[in-house]
Image 1 (cartoon, rainbow over the protein chains, first blue to last red):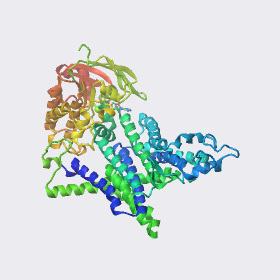
Image 2 (image 1 turned 45 degrees about the horizontal axis):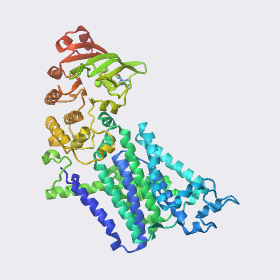
Image 3 (image 1 turned 90 degrees about the horizontal axis):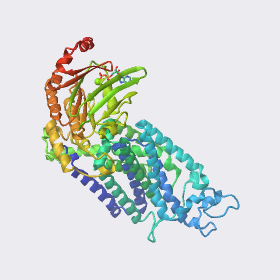
Image 4 (image 1 turned 180 degrees about the horizontal axis):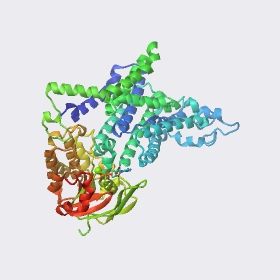
Length: 384
Length: 249
Ligand SMILES: Nc1ncnc2c1ncn2[C@@H]1O[C@H](COP(=O)(O)OP(=O)(O)O)[C@@H](O)[C@H]1O
Ligand SMILES: [Mg+2]
């Protein structure tokens, strides 16, 4: 039995990672870098979402940016209304500045009717509403989408194509609705997240902690989720959906459930990103961004939630450092493309695979073997 | 139980003009072990596909313990109490042998009922017996995809036992097995007899003699003959059907 299969190794790895991100502010006191890392932790959360759907459910979603983007816009709408500029538009109620620029002459300066459809913004005056919608809207949309896709037994590359087309469509609609969404420019000049009277300046260590703790919780919950019986059944549907059906499982319900969980995580990540980055933009729904997420997860290891998470953080950190050198800045995309191809060809389990091999090597050297899921002690020579 | 396990009545499928199964009927009693014989291409696998909902029939009905299951969804038929082994072993290759059993032994079918950890005591007890019966304890933590062909067949059989269906369909469970492996498989199937109603498609005559009670012979999608081994072997229709393929061995 391989040591890396032991649940204790996982507990150790997750524990180390969580400790590292929680202790980071002690050694990194540059608020600029801390804020940067906070954003990369959000990308790490996207890695978790991708690994969950791609690695565990076998569903390659090339449109995860849709849910990230929706999550981002929902909270950004609230924070926009909380912004100082929104109170400077000549009304006693907040109105986003760009709506005034887009309004017909003589339109009342009020969210009810300044531009057609602007009433949609009204409930977002409550910050909690935007935050809740960041997760609720992705959940509702992904549930409807997944039900349609998986009831029809669409699978494999067709799912990738449908999700990809959808994110592009959503991006177009978003840009097209300029008077409501500020189109191409996105939502900028946002206020800060305010909880119980405390304002979370993105450069505060406290803001970093909101994100680091959120990531830790998501990581642990997702890890627990896949070790439930339902998580195991999900993996069975990935390996052989026909066999799962003949065992009596309605494969589509499992796919819908986990696709929706993955979308919820992406929406939550979108919300956190806005808190750290102070903007929401249609670029979140760019094809390149959704594909980048898949690359991060592939490099980190799509069949490991932690691996995919670390892959995302690592690639983004290296990218940020690389962009400080002009030569690398130019060639960075090519480098990432090359790494992706190499990983797909030679390291299907990504960085997580290297980690597991190393642990197994140590296990063999030290003569330690894990306790398996079966809880049985097997003859090591037969088991290997 | 007065109801027969399965009533197959006039079952047919039309693949664009070609009738792979053509008005096939038979009644299988509760607790029976039925062997289905027939030359290659006779429609045996297709018949199982029709019963289990893998292929939609174009005519006829299938009734299991009094409940109509004709053309129901695969998972509904499975839940109604029907399990199936495929001709090409079908297991979850990236899961370990134990995890394969774990999935199969799950009684609760929905997502939310399965948001739980570990094994119930009843599940553990059952899996211990199955691991014993299928002699998989040495490979229990191995990836199913890394098993030998014979081991994979036993794993799939074990999964069927774990699933604990009242009716079990086995499509060539000894295909590609050595003599020793075939014998062990017949022992496993014998152990299932009595607790389950079993329909098994098989070519290996030594194996058929070992386990058979009543035999159904299929030919060109139709039922050709039905009865005990000795009756079947001496039936001229059966001998004719097998002429092309070298007779019953
Ligand atoms: N989906 C299909 N479409 C067309 N023909 C099929 C299909 N499935 C099976 N057949 C044909 O039906 C016949 C019966 O096949 P099968 O049931 O596999 O035979 P057996 O299992 O008895 O060897 C074969 O001639 C096969 O080519
Ligand atoms: Mg066949």
